[in-house]
Image 1 (tube, rainbow, N blue to C red):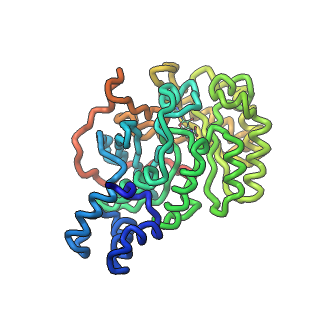
Image 2: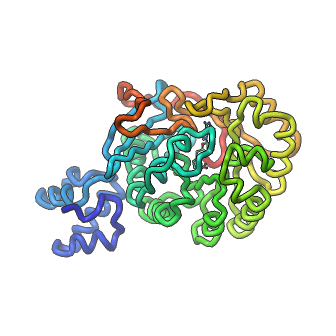
Length: 367
Ligand code: SAH
């Protein structure tokens, strides 16, 4: 009978599980799982019988359903099947100066943002802490196997992290404490779940906060991000201000540029005013059209002029490169279908060892 999935147990619980073994065994196994990022079967320093027992009692939480690698090798996407059949995705992105994994915090999402593929599919279930940590471990292992070091984790995959607060925060603590990533390299992204942001402000680890803004007037934001009706922009700004005051971390706003919807001159002015009041950094990304919201993203030349107009008003803004579009791994396109669903999952492409990324992305903040 499995005791738990492999990355659900903390160090003390692993010690208890292995209480009948010599004490140093738990240290060896812990180092194997968290330093070598190894499967129990690979732990050649522990006896074979114990390896077999660990395989039985600590099975992985994530079963690989598909893996896709972008043509340039710099982006890898995994589709995992979880206990119970729900599916989630994880995206690993190598940049020149950092390697970032984008993890899912829920299977599906209840926030129902109109333009987001995950939101269009509805909510399935929360992920456990172990399921989140294991996504990071798998990405860290792949990175190490290709001579890269995983440096950043962003909670920007499927789900609303602050709607699954305790398990997400449990994962943050484990990623920081057990995998050794610095809190300043961890970013929690939210549509603006204000009680969650308040709780984050009270935590001891200063993670980065990203808010998916997309509109800086309530009428438009109510349409794009329905949670805005509950937590409108003024209240969001007040809570963000408190976060900044206690955490001293940079706040960023995500803004998916939608052709003719939130890329007009009035949008620039509203966004600049809102962001400047909080000294927030703006990440711009052209919308990826999704089945339920087929409007196109703002074309590249107008993305650049939107950024320039923001900069002219004193707002720092970066155009984010659209990573992974050729493998459906782009922002907002993560929508794993349940078996029998109408949309097929991305076709696994040939998996080869990715070449070192040669393209030079523009300097991007946080991510
Ligand atoms: N629920 C959290 C975490 C998901 S992050 C949040 O919303 O912040 C996923 C990011 O991709 C968010 O910034 C989201 O607004 C953005 N996104 C969603 N759909 C998109 C799309 N179709 N094109 C571009 N970005 C999108």
